[in-house]
Image 1 (tube, one colour):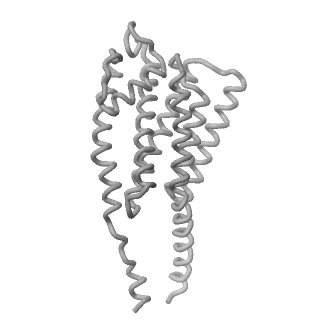
Image 2 (spheres, one colour):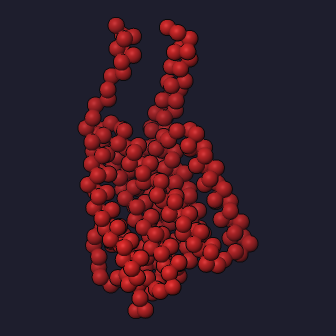
Image 3 (cartoon, helix red, strand yellow):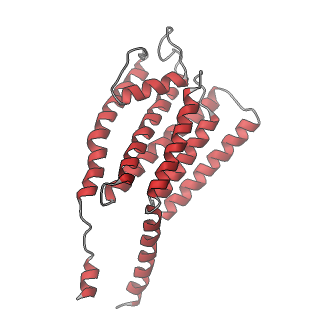
Length: 244
């Protein structure tokens, strides 16, 4: 056996061991992510204006950090993500302490929330699709990803409202982050109670996109996770050679 091959195998085994170690903490990790999501949901639900809550944004950043840890992304990607998340968190704390406010800051909070909430569910689905077996972790991963998508569209509605001159729900309803959150999840689940309806073309387009996304998520994302649960782990060729 050549020296380069001997060197590569311990490195690959070490990396696989690290990913497996993180994978064993999947259920507690998703519990932590769901707790953080619940807290951020509550902070958004009590927000009676369109201004995003800095505290909710910090919880979203923490949720994404937890997701990146339990989904066993590559170490380089994880380190870069943690640097970005930490920088955004520190900047948020500083802005809050100095009392910074204004429409531009609100737009930045909303856009940053969208970026964070966009990568998290994708990482969860990709990770679960590679795993074998449908268990409690896979179920919690599906729930977490679904809630993340609902939160994602909440801030898409929020961003559209912030950059638009017209109220999202017209003059008859309160244009607040709380109502945007409620409308997002009723649209995602295609419940649509009817007490809120977007009147601007931008928000109507987002509502249609979210309704379609909600259906596609149930069809594709859940199917990918279930497909991963039905696959058997393949035998490594080098293992067969070594055994022989």
